[in-house]
Image 1 (cartoon, rainbow, N blue to C red):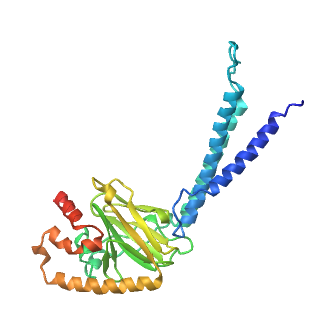
Image 2 (spheres, rainbow, N blue to C red):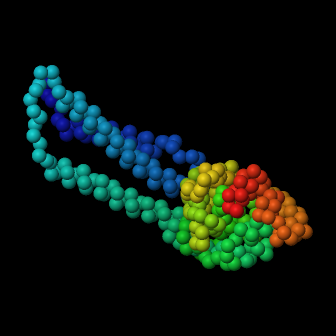
Image 3 (cartoon, rainbow, N blue to C red):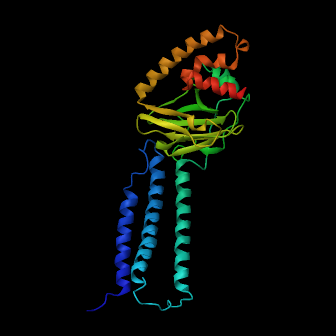
Length: 325
């Protein structure tokens, strides 16, 4: 019986490994539901890396299993193994292939980052002084450290398709221990949740009140640090209505794990309805606040009426204020 050449076995194994790797890499369910224009770009890059990882795993582990079987110690065989000093072609091969893979992945990642807008984060955030004069923005004005902010030059900005075009919706986002506060300069709304219309080009101007926080929306495949004193930007387009978690991905203190909120993607009609309702509600709330001198109130007394809008409980607010004081 004629023995099958090793080269043929290698070819067959390569075809099988390639087929399995591509199928698993392109059909995995490891990522959450896509909900932004940027998500398919990130998932495409992830699937390529996952495909390569599966192929490497099968080659390495498969080789180990084959060698365990083929070169196992036979009963009664007490001889030494064949002395092997090295194999230059093999060493060049397993050095060159990973090098090429890493270089190609680096080029691919730069292209993805550019298409997402990472190379040109040019935004125009509203100054703290401007926000302070917008009705309903009492919390945002109170929590601001500075009188003005500069345009962010760090983050995910306009994509090549939207370059030099103003965003449809601008939201100022401030991270504090341990909550996110969203202020809408165009309407004066302040909320503990992010509400946006589907299909709108949204620009978030991020800042931090105390320590570094990280604004992460897994379904959008986007994450951007909020830095004290350094404005950052995150620009995206939501593509699917729904409610998605917002997580702080930077260890920011003892209650870091509870620094969560949500982004609610509305249809345009639902967003307009939410905006109108909140403008009316916050205008009424502002009238009540104006009747009281904020200087006469403690931090807890001042923020207590806004706990619902901030998305946190009164007990959590009290514990945070007590720790800060």
